[in-house]
Length: 283
Image (cartoon, rainbow, N blue to C red; front, side, top):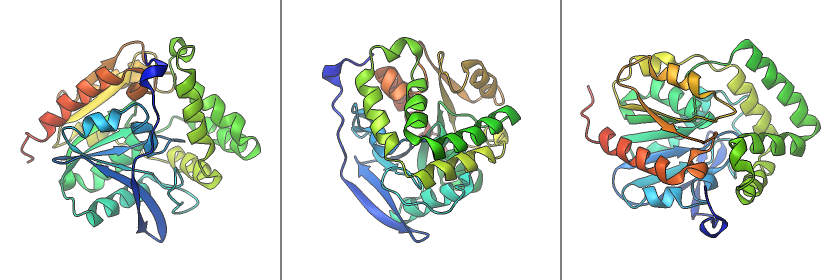
């Protein structure tokens, strides 16, 4: 649990880059081997900085965080943000920065983007961490939920984003994390409507990428919360078993936001994993 005294949201120094005719925002802190942080749906790169998570990683690594298209201050790159298209945006940013090898950490939707990236650009990936994210495609029921969400967000965007943000936290943590909830709601409320719809459409049609984990030539870790309301813990345990080399990092009493709800444990697991990814020689 984060106490109010330890939570001091801050905005990192950011830059913009033109990618496919759209302005894409990113932050670049620290030195050394590179970790790329990809935020989730209705988030922005600020989520990694609000409680010092990215800053702690930057004590040991160079940390690149990116506003995915239509989120934060990045512009949209189409009316449907396919995971493959967003992966290409990430690749262009990294190429422009002159970076060739890095570990990808994707939270929720950011994990879907990281999987699409790893499938197409495996030679650039030293490691892949799915942070409350899955390689499975949406079920038919989930696709129907996406359609319902698209209709709702067009009609009442704040009602939709406020409800979704609260659901990201484990129920037991909601009472103690009201400041964090208000902060995330503010970030979510600034997400462009076109970006919200484009990503819902893109997530709805994304393909199953369990084979990316099954045949990965780089280390993989899945970080999962035992009280995740979005992705049931059991489903991520099952996913971790597609390849015996996939490491499962369990966060007890945590929902969908380990970097906020269980910061220190998440950092410890991620630092240990990153250390291994940069020591492993790729095939």
